[in-house]
Every structure is written in structure tokens, then in C-alpha cells.
Amino acid sequence: YAYLRDDDGYAPLYDDFDNFYIRRLQRRINDCFSFLIRGVPGRTLTILDRYSEDNNQTFKLTGGTTVALNVSSYNYLGFAQSHGPCAAAVEACMKDAGVATCSTNTVAGSFKIHREVEELVATFVGKPECAIYSQGFGTNATIFSALMGPGSLIISDELNHASTRFGSRLSGANIRVFKHNNAKDLERVLREAIAQGQPRTHRPYTKILVVIEGLYSMEGNFADLPSIVALKKRYKFYLYIDEAHSIGAVGPNGRGVCDYFGVSTNDIDILMGTFTKSFGAAGGYVAASKEIIDKLRVTNASYVLAESMSPAVLTQIKTSLLEIMDTSGVSDGLERIERLAFNSRYFRLGLKRLGFIIFGNDDSPIVPLLIYNPGKINAFAHEMQKRSVAVVVVGYPACPLLTSRIRFCLSSAHNKADLDYMLRACDEVGDLLQLKFSSGVAGED
Ligand code: PMP
Image 1 (tube, rainbow, N blue to C red):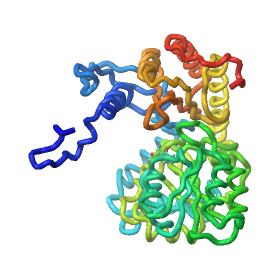
Image 2: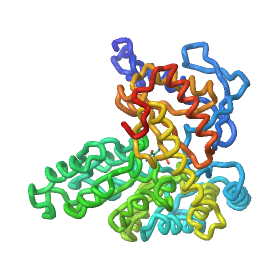
Image 3: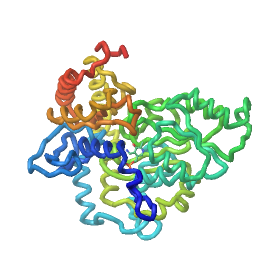
Image 4: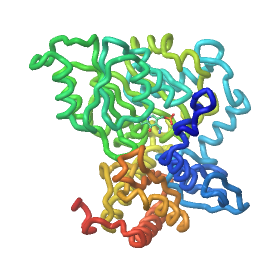
């Protein structure tokens, strides 16, 4: 890297960008992602066609478009739409409240709808109080500093999202990591952290917070919540669940992993989630006891110091939530949840029958299809796009180098014909790239 030093020996700020791997990562990202889209990213995605004359460093638009079935953005319940009750409500709100609040929650940035959505979310997830934030990432990135610190301990699943890992480090708390979704390994870490053999006696730490996700976004599996809650009763720690992918999408009433496993929300101290996946909106929330939320409202940097949520976005969330929570049968919220559950099982079974190896829980709308060889991930994305299907490819560092995968994010907006079409496309591309690793008998792997 000698050439990356100026005459005084200083490195440029981007010095570690110009290495072999990161340059390749940039090309892969440019090649498979970062395309421009038009219109609403709902059941389909309209991609602006482009070409590159310099090995995927820069692109020019051809003027044409490709309409593809969309399994690449999050739209679990099909609320990211340009028509229907959400769109109408948002339009009405825009006339009344504009695009943004231009202030913070605590200054002049709170409309009545901010409190309404907080109350609705608290009721929906089953906790006494809730605070909402303009960004899900920012919620995780700042909340731990408000609740944890030096002298306390955060125990984190090794596959937790970057936002929680980032936020945990920022808090200054001690951090230990346990093997992904492995309650036995969590118990080992707990036993090492507290007085050996005396599970409930006190320990070198003022408090211990275990941080997990409801549905892991790269693995498509649910947290082993019953086992972790059983450990909580034995070892007395606080439990934080990031439900970014499970809220709305999982459980018979869409209320997340507690709903799915029949676990009481009293057993969870903090239920965090985002509005980006199931509600067709943006932002994050934290639902917990009144005491915790009271503290966050005055000490959590991104609640106090960041711009509060846009009223238009809140209107979208409120309308989606009311649809999901409606039990009178007037709205189709519950139908959307059922359709998503059907789509998840149907598509997963179809892929298994074709001989693909997939990860995750049968009820999970995130479907990772293993292609292993990192050299094939771009080819898979391109072959699928040629067949009008927009998928997400996942390679290192988002997953281990040798378990490269394709991720399908299913939606209740997909119909059975869409799923059959995508299965046929996977069948063809799987043969072309030699990606069928199992016997093809469903349930065998
Ligand atoms: N938590 C998890 C598990 C996520 O996957 C994400 C983003 N995909 C976030 C938090 C951040 O949420 P947002 O995109 O709403 O900022």
C-alpha cells in the first residue's frame, strides 16, 4: 500500500477501499444490486435497464425497463402498494401534514398520530408502552447506550443484525456472543458470566441483556424462543428481541414470534421492530414497560435528537396496522397473513422438491437457497432477471464465504401463479448452474 500514502506518509480516508477484495465487492454490488427502479416496489419491480463500459464501475441507462416479479424487497403483507386504503390515507395526510415534521419528538415534531401509532403498536405487540423512531437501524444503534453501559453485559446471537452489534458496542457494555440460535451455548455463556452453579445469585455484572432476533434475515429461521425463555427463568436476564422481520409476518395474528410460539409477551422485556418490512413504511419501534419507555423518551439519542417520524409514513403504518388488527372481517389483514403463510410453505416445498437446499423454518417468508460457490452468485441473479424475477444474492461478508445463497423475500401480494412461475425459473437456472444438491424428496434435508 505504499502508493496509498502522500508525501507526508499520511493515508487517504479511503485507504482500505482499494484492496483486492473490496474492489471486487464493489463490482459485485454494482453488478447485482444498486439498480435503479421506478414505480412502487410491490408484487413486481420495474428496473431501469443499464449497461457498463468499465467493468461495472459506472452505468448508463438504455432507456428501456424490465418488469420483474419482486422477491428482493420487503413487502411481507403487500402493503407497499400504490392503491387501496393505505395510499388513500397517505394522500389525505399529505394535504394536511406535509412530508416531514422538521423537528424532533420532544420539540415541535409530535402530531396526534405519533401518540396514536405508539398506542396501537403497544396494543398490537402486547406491551404496556411503545416509543417510535424514524429509522429501524437508528433504533438498534442507539437504544443500548440508553439502557446498558460499563459494568453490564450484553449477550448477543452471533448472527444478529449489524445495527444491534453496532449499538451494543457503542453502549460500552461488556459483550459476549453465543452460537447462532443455540440455547445450549447461550447457557454456557451465562454460566461463565455469573457465579458458577448458582444461576440466580448475583454476578460481576449489574445487569445482563440477551439480544436475539425473531426471524433471522439471512438464515430464514425463527429464534428458539421457548428454550431461551426457559433459560431466562433460570438465569434471570433481560431479553431483547429484534422483530424487524417477524412482526406482521409471523404468527397466526401476525404479532411476531411470541404469537407463533404461544409465549407470553410478559416474558420478554423489550420487543423492538421496524415498519419497513410488513407495513410498507419506514421507522422503528421499541415496546416495553412504562418505566423503560419513559427513560427512552428522555435519554435515547435517536428518540430525542433525530427528526420525528413523517406523518405520512405514520398514516401508512396506522392504516396497515388497523387492517391487520381488524377481526370483524371487513378488512383483509388476517387474510394477508394467511396468504403469506401459504406462500412461504408452498414455495419452500417446491424448492425442496426440485432438489435445492434451503435454510430456515417452513413458515418463514425469507427463503435462503444455498448455492455455496461464491463464483455463481452473480450468474444466478442475472439468469433470474433474464427470466423476469428480481432476487437478492447474499455473499461474504453478509454470510460465510462458502455458504453463498440467494434470498427470496415472499409476499402475500404474490399469487400461486407467481410462485409456480418462480419455481420454474429456479428449476431452469438450477440445472444451468448445477445447483441441485439434494435428492429432491421434500423434507429429506
Ligand atoms: N434489524 C434487522 C434484523 C434488520 O434486518 C434491519 C434492516 N433490514 C434493521 C434492523 C434495520 O431496520 P430499517 O431498515 O428499518 O432501518
